[in-house]
Image 1: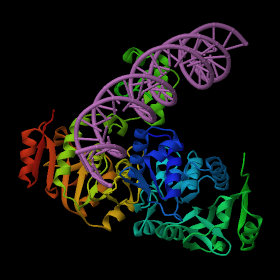
Image 2: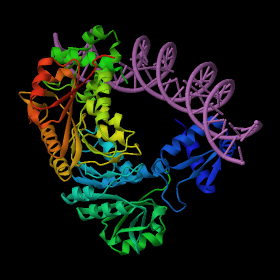
Image 3: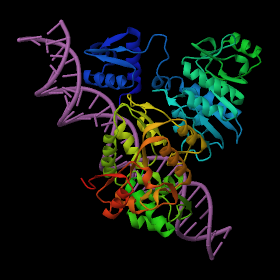
Length: 256
Length: 256
DNA sequence: ATGATCGAACAAGGATCGTGTTTAATGCGC
DNA sequence: GCGCATTAAACACGATCCTTGTTCGATCAT
């Protein structure tokens, strides 16, 4: 229900202004009041905003990570290309630890037909991989974070620590030579750290824009990464600094 | 794609005869050859049967459990009533271990709005519970069995053993006073056993027809169950024998 | 108390899915 | 190698579902 682009419009508007009235959103989107109301209801159910009489106010803090449902849509084509490149780095028969996040979800889809052992760290990826006849699916325990469905907590870390993987594919919110790999969520960061510790080879996958960002929680220094898969959009200074830390950089084209 | 009742017809026919030609299935269902062909393709993708030129042969052994996709449909109304009764036995705030299977999937749906801590033992139930704002979801590790998506294996048993629950809701394939609770799958049986051991109270939920059946793998004696929720269809002899083992029996109406 | 807002029910429009037909390509048996 | 049945792809029709807009009565805030 509700076309995704209108949802994005609404969420963006509400987040930008802090709060919006139904009338404002009607004018913005051109939809009727009832449609706006139904949209707000759905978005409130996802925890993105809070309803009050006559409008809605944002629940997402300005510096916060935008919700999963919105991030999936953004830059899908680029994520597919990054995912394809990652898939190429992985050989049949390997055991793979697959991080949570929208980019890694695309990696899951790219890996679906292959003969592999995969432990996904989010339920989204797990669902994408059920039905893939050739992959042996291994689920860690843990608590799925709402929306993101990333598995976190002591159960997750224990599940990971009990195993050893050929490759870990790690997504990130920020990645620089100076601060290393960083994430928004503290619990996520702990899981990523465990994942890196349990794998022989670590592939970090990150859009070029992330190579200039730093998020709250430090996961690991750049040197603990084997290979970074990114795109042409990454500033040369950033990639050179990372390469200087001993990391292999692979880039795909930003645009088709 | 494909209406579920025709799928059931096809799978039943193929399983009964061992193999069927496309022409036979056309006559049986009244559908066109192309539709049959598409159905067979879909069913083969689910691993239910094997395609050969001109027809298909069954991959399900005669005494085997019918596949999940078919069992979900059967007796849905009754399952809902059983699930509602189970939900009534559970108080807000409890920690609940929820078994795999189609009946327990309905229990998950019945519990979705409540304030509870739930650890589901199948991905189907887990998916049904994501988005339930009030429930704290706890996932065990393990390998999801294809189709069923029931989590099994050492990771699952370890996850369960690390926790203690107020209530375990257990589904079953067979349940008699003599043989106790039985399951088709050996790995499943081990998980159920761990679940029963980790819970203070054990609620078994089973359609009346299951109270005369016995499946391959023995899970636990009837005495280890606290309460059985079943329906009027259960033979009086069976329920009395179970009651004699010290189990509380609760029944719902078989038909609306 | 009054006005705006909300939620439910109903109706229309569009999109999507399932199904059947046609066509061309493929594979099997002779 | 030939002929036949089977299959896969492409297209078209029909039904169904989803989305949206409207109306109405109920609700809430000023």
